[in-house]
Length: 601
Image (cartoon, rainbow, N blue to C red; front, top):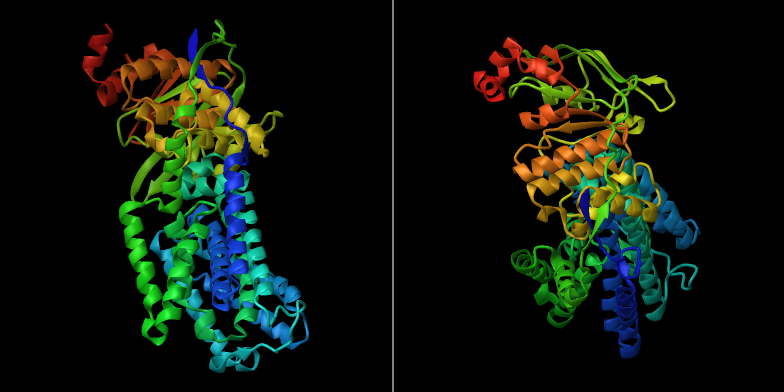
């Protein structure tokens, strides 16, 4: 029998927010709108219109820069496109309300064209590429004078009224800016609380693990950058109407791109409301300083942003939202849920009999330069079987795993997987393997560290269930089965190595795989966790999942494996029953050593 910890239901939530937080947020937003109306001062109106615009732009940027982890420092491209398309169409007699959608459409096309090739870049190279494209668009705006006005810029026609977004009064621009902020927040909240949001964060945290969970990482990032570009362009159209004049240096500005990213960094990158908090903190300070000091304050906003950023990095590395989250958690310690122990149903005493072949690996060859990593590797996995894959370090075991899960393409040979309908398939990419029912873990455990245990497992569940509530139920059920119930709300980075390995297995099992590839899940854990992992693996097998396991812990290999394959220098040197293989003189010499044989005698 197995002890499993269960917990009472979580407090009532609205897509991740407690109702108390929802009401607090609504009150905060209402106060932001009411303050300038009550004060009724032109300068205060200007500060809050600017605050709403920058908060909206930063929220839009955060969808791609925070959720997806793509550090775009050329986001002013889309802002400038929205501004220019809106004014050019306005000069043709078309209302900016329509022009903003046209600008958004152009921005989406440009975003996809730029981002698709740039997604191949990693680290700072993506950011540098976006800066380069920003400069290209600034030069293009200077070059096409007839359309953009060149360095002279463009003035908007002074057509007043709601139809043209140009007003003598201050209240209408405040209403529009506030409305755009609400739209951006609503879109960001919807994305983060639905499947695509979990997949974006997973892609940001561990792209290879996200691919193994069946996430089309390129597709979700393209969706994120498209939505972000569209929102940025729409806000850019309105801001152009508010400014009444635009020119290339201001519209396609690197400092402006950095500025909108800065609000998200200070408020809490990757959170829904962090960009808003960053703008609320910084915009009033910089605008009031400019208003009081006038020409003496040139460049002061840059000093303010830099000083605040340094303080945040030193004392609040997760931004203002991180601080609020810690305060919120400390205020709720008295209401934390207590784990309850119940007894789960015992695993079946009799295992199902082995079925037909489900995976066929034929003559796999892989070279890395002049190194022959695998040489004519072939084997078959049957339904309900556990196949152990052992061998010395550098034998090519993980390379074989990468080829039979789509992370590496073989130079020759093939991998075939039988589908649930009985037909054979030859998948090629990680998404193809996941779709046909092959799940895998990694030699170096790859959790989504910034996500909770529950959210980690939900990423796997989303492979089969698109609804958030269904995925959450599957994640909770899987977590309790894996002994992770008490840690559902804990961040993955806080688990022990044994817990992280169980978490990775739980994430894969939430995908409902038919074939499970385990890459050294028992390495580096204590004997208690090894015994628990063995029992867990046997229960997974008894549920009808076929398993291939790379393992160095011979206790586990002997306890689990129906058959064992031994790799050495990229070749299969022995295969058969575990008891037979460990007595093979070739295996003893290449891997086990005589000490192991004496210990088994």
